[in-house]
Amino acid sequence: MKLNMDLQTALIVAGLVFVVLVFGYNQWQIRKARRPRELRPEDDLPPMREPVVGQSTAPETAARLHEAAAEQPPRREPTLAQAPAGTGAAVAGNNHVAAAAAAAASSADADEAVAEEVAVGAAASRASEDEADAAIAVAPAPAPAPTPAPAPEPAPAPAPVAAVPDGQPAPAIVDPLIDCIVPLHLERKASGDRILPLTGRLRRAGTKPVHIEGLRAEANAWEPVTAGHQYEDLQVGVQLANRGGPLNALEFSEFVTAVESLAESLDASADLPDMGETVANARELDAFAAACDVQLGVNVISDGAPWSAAYVQNVATQDGLVLSRDGTRFIRYQANAEGVQRPLFTLQFGDTNFLRDDLTVKSGRQITLLLDVPVADQAARPFKTVCEYGHTLAQRMGAQLVDDNMRPLTEASFVAIFNQLEALYQKLEARGMPAGSPVALRLFSN
Image (tube, rainbow, N blue to C red):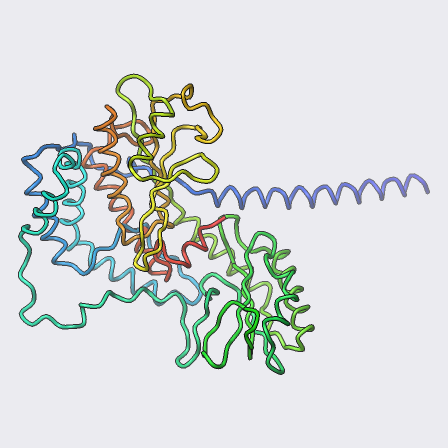
């Protein structure tokens, strides 16, 4: 009898250990799949050519750039592969992919010209800002249309990130593209002062952010729940995926339990979604995000003696870069269309921490300029900015510009990278989340 009991206990323990191992392996696979991958310029490159650098080519290249830009609608930064068939975004994805294919032929010359412009950036940087502005002002461009229509004058509206029925208020933060949204129907109006103390458990579900919004009748708009305001209805959204992976069953259960508790406290009814469908949507969104999560590095390598960390810090500070809070990198900011300063790229000097390390002793021969592609504003043409800044650093510091395999970046390299970025940007835009947009910033966050 005792032997049977020991055998049963051993089998139970073995079963529990097996379940824990399976769960741990799955979590490791998810985290491994979600690591941002690097975009390597040597992928599918044409035969390498030496970069063309010289003053004699600059006017010709500038003319081609302006001519190409005038023939197309406002230039989009690069994009990677077609968008996968997604729930609720398949039709928009197909339309954008078709448009990208139609525009590919017409933009070929412009891409080549942009690459040449980057290649001659080292020589062109010697000219003053006034001379550059004058060159742009007098550069030949195609004549405008005979009767310019007023429609192109306003800035084009950003791609919609959520389909909102006519007459319905748009959400303030939550977005059906990346959130699981649960409506809460109130029996009577509730004040923000009453709601806020009940939302302590609705900050996060595991690693996924949760947002609560209230509908104000007088403004016919959703807003984050605020003290002193009255709300007719509520909606709670949990993010389906981020760089930590997709929403899993445990996180979904935690979210639903907290929503049910809030609904009970407010005498509200909740329209809860199906767990299987929600988790499947989260995995599909995470797979799409993993395919678009690209970080692109450009390296500046010293041709001579190593640089001290103090020297690198001085150069970065003089160039207007801002040290991060943890001291591991400098950040170049640029204002977006709304005037908000957003990170464009970062500068790293090996593993140097500029707050903790002795900068007079720490030294190295490599500076890395890193572009987080889906987070940087597409309209700012970030890769072009990174390459131009890298060329100026190489000139001033006696260095050369190389890729992650220490191969010099040539004109052919730039063309290949531009083409890959164009495909990636088109893929993100087809999904309704252009690079640098609020929804993209949320999806590609930790």
